[in-house]
Image 1 (tube, rainbow, N blue to C red):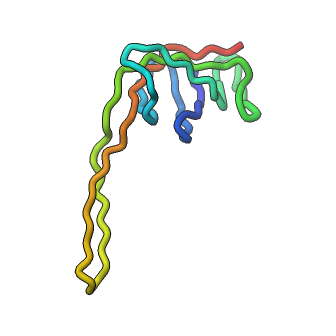
Image 2 (image 1 turned 180 degrees about the vertical axis):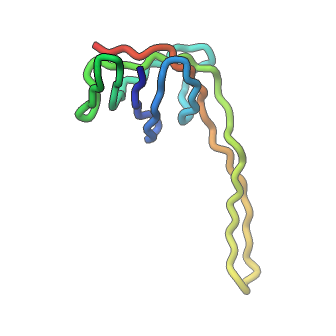
Length: 104
């Protein structure tokens, strides 16, 4: 069984037991999170596609804490002008463990 959920402006394919990184959520480590924007659910009985969401479907997750992703470097440069800027960025995320997918 798997589901496609939308969180943080992104769509993720999740299954029970998966560990995923999503955009930063304001939850503590160990808290339970319910993702209600479920776009698709697939199980042994078949596949249900929402319009836009599957009614009464939720994905239950457990927060494992927050973190930051790998650093990316941003470099700006204008030729022959002596202008150069270098900056780094680390995107924050929340790590979730998928517990179960509920439908109906």
